[in-house]
Length: 119
Length: 111
Image (tube, rainbow over all chains, first blue to last red; front, side, top):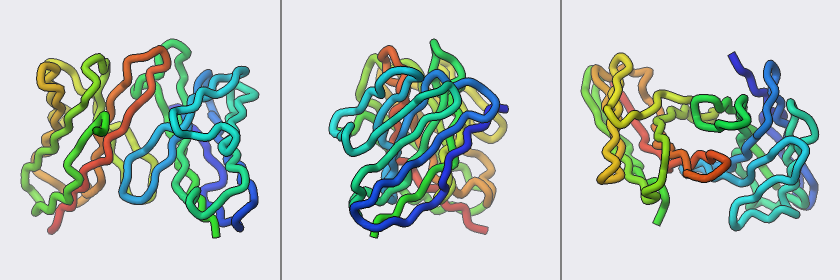
């Protein structure tokens, strides 16, 4: 089955540093990847949609200069949290779609998530 | 108002009980509906899709009422391993088929 690898699974950093999270589709080409953020006891909130070879589409309220997304290949998307602050501490999850025309849940695979703690 | 609303629970039930979760969505043009399960500190995993005619998968039954914009999940004969958070998820109707997650209903099944 489709596998999405997300790395690192956990990261602790100091305030002001930048953190990069990678999302890789291991056995399929992901034309579209989605980045979510989940705060404790809250739902997954879509941050941005990443399409290979083009700029990411950010959801309302998500700062594109703060959360840099790069989708340079069909198997890799990265999320960089720039100048991280304690309020950026959260669980970041990516998902990848195998189907260019249909990104419904039945063709989405989620990564295991990355837990970011900013001190 | 949230686009997808769920009772956060927790629902605390004994093994073998039947439990039902409800979910409402506000976007009448929503196309597809799903229930996901999320264990603590893990990624969500697709439990089942929800079809207009209702559908069943073993002990799990999902129902959709488009007129009322209401989705339900029924779990029969609860197992300890069913303890998790159940997320109601809607496919927003736009070109990118984005998933919108509810905040989840927590289920605790006790021995």
